[in-house]
Image (cartoon, rainbow, N blue to C red; front, side):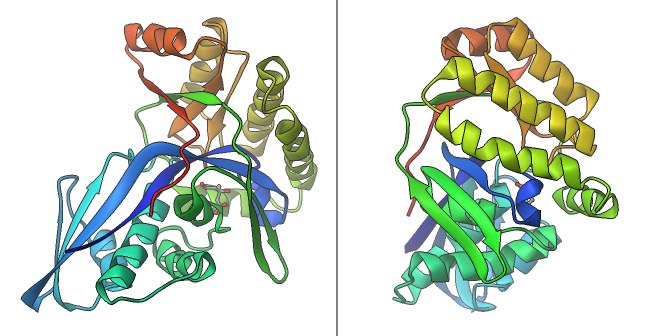
Length: 287
Ligand code: MEV
């Protein structure tokens, strides 16, 4: 048996702007996708408790030989919620197959191969989701003319509360919508990009960090990627004591992240109000 995994992610700041070359910060979370490969006679088959669809089969076949493997996927990353489920799957597939074929991959090679698979899901991703799925921890990411540049930063002791809207956003469509409104939306993208260094400098001070995250959420709203459900989760979190909150990921559905001095209390209040919520520290990655 050969295995590989990739972790889920949350974008702290810079989603969408990152597609246009602005810097972004993302964290690995304590949710993982694992791929187990078992050699078998005959065609490769795919198994997952979350169901197997055409897109998943294409992703598997983008990495793994069409014959000779039983592919078992296990994941606790909610799908389509902006938590990097497809990037974690892509990284897990690449790592598992490298393990099965006794191939050593650098992080760059893992990223490159996983990005090709991710393209099947999302069209033209910036690569930030794959970088975090492969590295975990706190990642600074920027797309440049010569390729993506990512840096693993020292992890602050930050616990983030995740509130799930229960609906999925379509990353490909949302990124496409922002592109249709480009270049008119350039000032909003520039303002989001300018927040990243400020947020990076405020990571250990929740009273400074929260308002900056909320500012990022408002700009994402102006960009047209928030929804009334996401706005109401943000306000719920802030009314319940969060210093700030924002949608995380492409938007259109998915999750909101919140920072607070009392994460367990916020989760309890959200669950009491019928919201699917949990908290996560920054997870340092999966292999
Ligand atoms: C999706 O997790 C993040 C986006 O910025 C798209 C991308 O960077 O590929 C919306």
